[in-house]
Length: 409
Ligand code: PLP
Image (tube, rainbow, N blue to C red; front, side, top):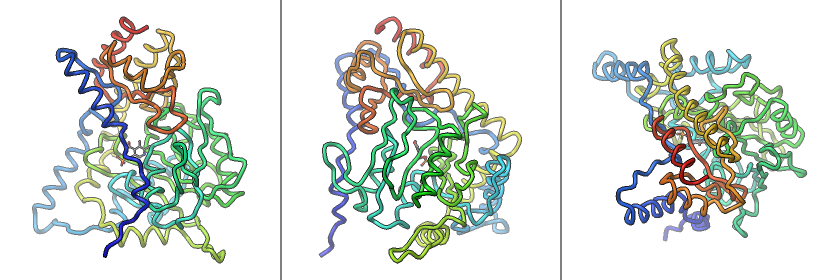
C-alpha cells in the first residue's frame, strides 16, 4: 500500500485567486456590461524584449541543424548565461562569484520551493509577514512548518511588516534556523536599506541562521542606495542563498528562467555538528532532480545582457514603473495611504477606516469595477490592506484611477 505524504493534507486550499474569480464572476452575471479593470494581476503584460526574441529564434535554428544541434545541457546551466550573470549582475556591484556558485533554473518559484530538499525537516522557520505564500507552503509540505493554529503555523515565526513599523521587519528576539527575506517585497512593494539588511546578516552570522533571500524584483529598484543583492553586505556569502528570476525583469513568466546563488563558503550543520557546504548539496540535488533549463530559453535570457537587451529591459521596467507612479499619485491625491511602488511593481494600499481587505475588495469591485488582491491572502499582517500591481496596461491604470476618484472617494 502506498502511503501519502500527509503533510500535504495540512495545507488549507488556497482559495485567494479562485475566491476573487468567483466574486468577479458573480458581479459580471448581474452587471454584464461593466468593463472590469484588474489592478491585481501578478503576471506581466508587455511582450519579450526584441533581443531575447531574436536570440531564441537563432537558438531554434541551431537546434534545427545537425551540426549545431544540442541535447541535454549542463544541469547547472550554460556558461554563456552564467558568465553574463556574474559579469552584469554581480561583478558590476563589486561582488565576486565563481561560475560553480550560479545555478540556472526554470524560475525562482521552483528554487524557493525546492531548496528545502537540502535542509532538515525540523529547522525552525522565520518569515516576514505578509509574504509570498510559496515560502510557507513548501515548508508545510515536508512537515517543517508544524501545525496550523489560528491561521499561523506553529514552527514559523511571523515577523510583522506594517505601516506602524514602516514595513521594517524587526530582528527576532530568539534564534531561528532559516529566515526568508524578499526584497523588493511581494506583496508590500517595500525595499530594505543596506543598514537594515546588515542587521539581518549580522543576526544570521551570530545565530548560525540561513537566510533565503528572494530578489526576484531587484531590477525594479530605482534608488541607487538600495541593495540589489544580499551579497552587497559583508559576510552574507557565509549565511545566505539568493534567488533571482527573469520573469518580471524581462517578461519570462511564460518562458521560464531564473537562477540561484549558493556561495561556496556557505555551510550548514549535521546533527553531530559537522559543517557541510550547501553548494555541494544543491548541486547534487539539481543533478538528480533537474535536467537543465532549455538552451533556447537560456539564449533568450543571456540576450538581456547585451547593450540592446539592457535598453529594452529598461524600457519595459520604465513602462511598469510609470504605471506604478500613476497609481501611487492617484491614490495619494484622493487621500489614501499607499506604500511601495517606488522600487517595486507592487503597491500596498491601506484600506480606509480600517475595513477588512475583502470588504474593500468588494467596494472597489462594485463601485469602480476595479479588481485588486485582498492583503489577507498574503498572511495575517496583510489584513486591512489590498495589493495592486503595476503590470497592467497604461490606459487601464489611468481609467481605474479616474473611476476610483469619481465613484469611491
Ligand atoms: N518570488 C516572488 C517574491 C514572486 O513574487 C514570484 C512570482 O510571482 C516568484 C518568486 C517566482 O517567480 P518565477 O516566475 O521565477 O518562478
